[in-house]
Image 1 (cartoon, protein in one colour):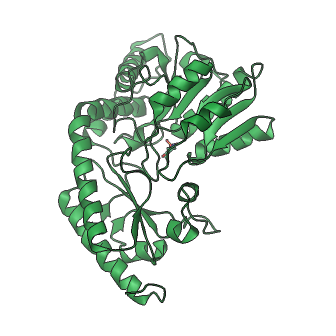
Image 2 (cartoon, rainbow, N blue to C red):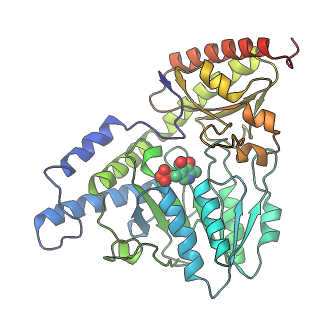
Image 3 (cartoon, rainbow, N blue to C red):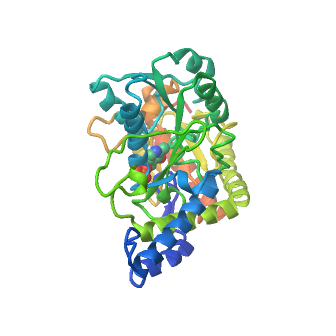
Length: 386
Ligand code: PLP
């Protein structure tokens, strides 16, 4: 089978596994053990990885807090700020197209008295900056807008959003899970105060992530959401996952090295897939702007075709559909609906995610197969007018 679902997760890079191996058996120490060399070796490995992660986002090592993944980082950022800055205000601003780890965290806080503004997006998937500016009040403590969208790959104008937040004196968090390692991200030039990312979307292991927490002007403070031994400068207790962290660091270092070349290759393959599909199939629509987009993302709606049937027809190719087959209700993607897509087009969408190990032959095969299956399904559709 062909894997084109690299937004869901990426395979590990074999070099990452190689870097992790010694920390399972020989160097198994607890990074918090200060009294012997087993602990020192583990701690040194963790600090090396911390530097590698800081380097990929333009941060300082001391600003990296290790977590179990981006879900936890998002929870820690939003709940941690809400609790720490409760005296200042209770208003949070986010967007309708965020990941559930943001939306459901906000919903939870609403139950405890927070007020949350869910900004709509324009048909291209981008937040309207004037609307953002107008939504900020003297009670606003946090703006959380994702960097690159996990379904449609849209890249928000993070630098401009960061600037608005800085001018208004409001903290800015971004879920950069899909962006880090794929496109240049810099917390200083983008005015980011908090940033979530995770290893398994950048060819690292699952179950390890990080939260960047700015230390200077302004110094961001968080209330810990996990109490215990006071690891990670009190912000996240729990024995560190040393092999996972080593893998995360190695994955970030590789991404930084290959980013320019890799993103160009991904964009080439993605555009080839798009061009062939659009040339051969009519009534086919791209979701989200192509202009500000992650290089490895393509999201297309094939009118008159049900996403689930298309997935079944191309079952040797792993992709995702905007038709949420995991939910009992068969709700179409809320991200596509936020762009203004009707239920039919949202149901008929496919997300393609190119990755490090995707070959041109796989892309060519995928294009041919999708074209064939869409044509066959449309022949059966009473609504499609040939
Ligand atoms: N945020 C975004 C944008 C994602 O795409 C994902 C992955 O599904 C997550 C958060 C959750 O990341 P993790 O699996 O590391 O908890």
